[in-house]
Length: 606
Ligand code: M6R
Image (cartoon, rainbow, N blue to C red; front, side, top):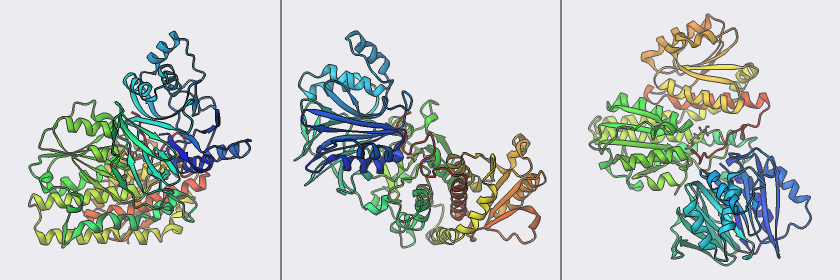
């Protein structure tokens, strides 16, 4: 949800800003812009469209020198996709970029109008710029503190004051900002991927603090201008992790990253036949005295939660609910100290998931999160955090983040089984062996890529598709369906296989693709019966299974036979097969796989 980059130092800023925006483009790609401090003026160059268009525009512009600047790539919220609405926004005294939403911008605009301030754009951001301009009387801290008191909503701001050339002031509420300093200068970004070409050591700007970027130093202050020591973090990701590495798209690369991401996530946590969370500092007490589990998340992460529900309920026998985070805080959920609330998130910054976590903390539940981005808000605010080790996920469509989130759910389930005496040591060791074996089916499924591509070709022109499954198969079918719809724009839905005939089967006509998932022995024949029902109505059935299907020839049009695993761990191969199907279908349809329309990677607004 908008990418932010800022630099002040000894190098020319334009390239640093544009390269940073390129790496942040997954956060929004409606428009992009930079501002460069040049002698007594600040030059703004902006355009609708992607960062590549900004790069061309900058290359065609005379005089793009300057060693201090800010850059922004926008995911439009208030105001259409126009150049005037693009950031940076400039007023007589300030140039500003913003990530987030100013909720009370109308009231603030009305007050400013009385003082003679008139915006030229339709954005909430320009109102924030005008507000800071109106409050600025030579003291940036005073103006920013007052603005922080007045503004409501989510914001990460980088502000350059006209009379303080070479210095960038930043502050945030909810929206992320990370910063670093090197010999070359000071950097700020909305995501660590923009900083890793320069440094792997960085800090997260705490909420309601001001960070001041200067050529020779970066300094963190409280709102009362007291200097505080930033808490440094280190990221292991290298620059190649955030590059395509020879693949056509990030999504394709990230699908192929999965064997490594999964191994990195699970192998350090399995010791002597047990799950070991000691390096994560997750106390065993977390898993004691729990009478219910609530998993809350959005989108793909919520689907990992569905996998979690399926496995925890079936093995641990405690009730689990999976709540969409954007609903959770408005439904007055029942929680107490015996409730374990698990928040799942790749970015760790999703506004709805963060709000759900805060509510769970307020109500005294035990909280833990499964997070990919180190030091993110959700990681910091949970009682405990289990980091997934997927590396940066750049494609808007989540792939490797999902499989490692599922791994996180399996590790937690095994720990619950151990602590609550559900399984003995020998049984746990055996489950963990099967778990590791199941994750190893990802490799052979990746080898089926060309074959799955031929199936994608057959469905590329479809208007709609349905995904079916029961139990665990339904959970992964939901994710398969989301993958297809979000990038290929095929109107795709996932259904519990038995539910289709209660209405939706009326949409099944000749040739409509039905992707049926059937890995669970005890309900295999039930799913098969449902598949027969759609086949009888002319559907094009793509059957994904790890079962022996000899004797079922007439059941399907295409078969994706994934390697057999224990039923409890059966989703990995199926998931990867569905990711590849969505990927190739989208490539055939001619869409940008990595940047589907209207979406952004990190949704930091409600
Ligand atoms: O960063 P998060 O995991 O919290 O993001 C949640 C969803 O926005 C995300 O999973 C989204 O559904 C995927 N990008 C879809 O592929």
